[in-house]
Image (tube, rainbow, N blue to C red; front, side, top):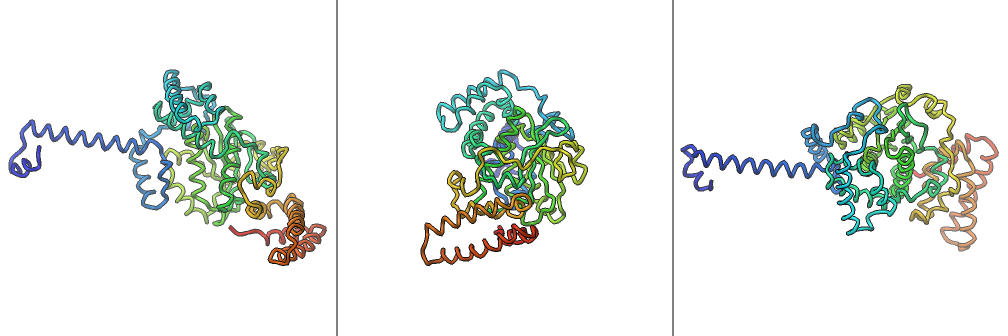
Length: 421
């Protein structure tokens, strides 16, 4: 019905045919609108639109609530208090093979999107394909697309290629991130002590690679069938808050390690971070929010038995969570491999200084002094570097006295050199 017809017939009721035509047009527009919304919702947190302003957060939240019943529905095993995918069955064989056919076409066009071993695993292991199908509501086309994106993501962060020994000794000895004993239903556990985290842009890439390397270890240990991540917020303050990093972490686990993240425990959330936590929650979909478990104190034992908890959580597990993998080196020695300058690599030691001092005074003192000596020999010129060398020399004397004397004085000295970030 044209615009002019509507104008001139405004005082009369439309005929049956015209009314039906209008209804058909309206129905077509409605379906098209719903299709567009469906396409927008294909990924719960779209990779190309990570806008964190409050308006976007509210819009995303409303959209997520509206389509909650059909948007990536949870499996029955995810609805219990301690979820796991250890017994989850693979998807229908026909769906798996259809997804593989689509994946092969993508690989033919863009083989550089995948590591060869990742691509071969996708072709051989049914669960590897099934976990993406489950993430994408059993839609092969979407699953194949997400698998290709996953391949690119894994190449970007060297997942499956990096080894724990590739990362600095300081990361391991600080004990801020480690894989530990399983929870009560058999999930692998990955502990993150957030009080050791700082927002240091130069170290963002290496930290992401380190976390994903550990996640890969957990994923392989149980064949991709469930890892519980424990965010320990004990003694945390605003300097440790990093909602954007948390969002990236959850988004990465959910999309590139689907059905590999069983649940997240947020442990001992301090009141000062309540606002930050509320903001972070607003960025998560309703599905992701259901994976969070807020617990304090001994309540964590409902999820992980005391004999499988680390000592600082009141557990009795004897596994050394500060163990350094054989072949690991100090931060300065690995700087080039991680595209860091020496100055940037030293920030790693500065961030972890007070934590390392509790267990390894030689790690953060001796190697730096030896490297300073070498630098002074190579740059024997009366400039700013010489002045720095003289200051370093005076610090060396103070450090030598502290190491042989009162440990508390040493800790105080090292803490004063930490770069606030």
